[in-house]
Length: 361
Image 1 (cartoon, rainbow, N blue to C red):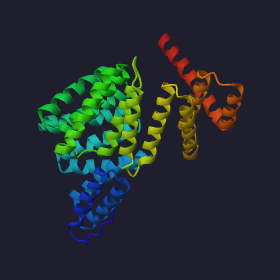
Image 2: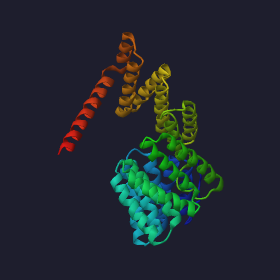
Image 3: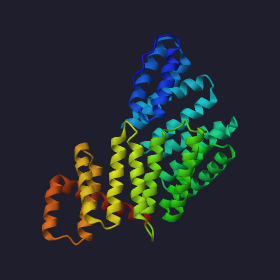
Image 4: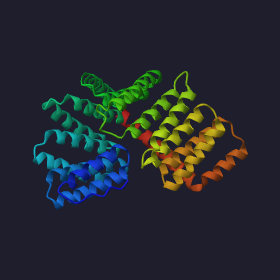
């Protein structure tokens, strides 16, 4: 998508809204480009308000598109400082929740929780309960990421009630997804399935109504919900692998709409490989994990290589592979793959021994 704008004092806000629209559609690379232009034009016309807004917009897109959080954090802090100077309380709260999301995405849940709680306090003070449900959902996810289940459940339940009371259908759907994830992590797979089904219904209702649906890209969050639903249906005493495969296909179709789909589709492949493993479709599982191994090597991702190699070895053990099959696997993994696997094995042993020492104190 290319849009040519006549340069005028209107261009800062036009570039901002174009960037936001593209971000909502999952076209993050183009969104970043338009926000960069918005920053240039805001500086040219000394439009401080839309300079801050474009910093906010680019920070939102960058934290989702890029692998490095520092630039996204810098832009979000620029926006936050500007809104604080002007005492724009709602925009402060909005920026803080996106800054928290940036920290959470890059594994700093403590800073994320601090941002969410500061945003929560502002919204309570200005009595904006519609958006408060959104902040509490994000806070619940941050707690969930560090396995603080009671804290997560508490804020999810308040978020659920607030979203219902204020007809915030979109974040009601996301909160139900959060509760579904919480129950999944607790091992309550059937309860998780019910919450995720409800989340999907609410999400479809939110899309149809347009209420509260301007915060995140639908394709990404839909894909995330489908991925979790597939995992929930593949676990438990009575797994439904057919439902699991259906939801993986739904996730794939959702992610294909994004311009940053590669890593998301890799997640679909990893979950599909696991589903084949759980259902003892050994040939399909081996084929999928070998494909994942190739992708990991192309991306130079030790984590992906280790994941694929670990499961390939487990599958060969479970299926009582022949000596010839084991030799072929070792040849495929090569020394690099075996070395990475060995390092991960010893890392886990070291981590376990440290945990035992800590518990003995």
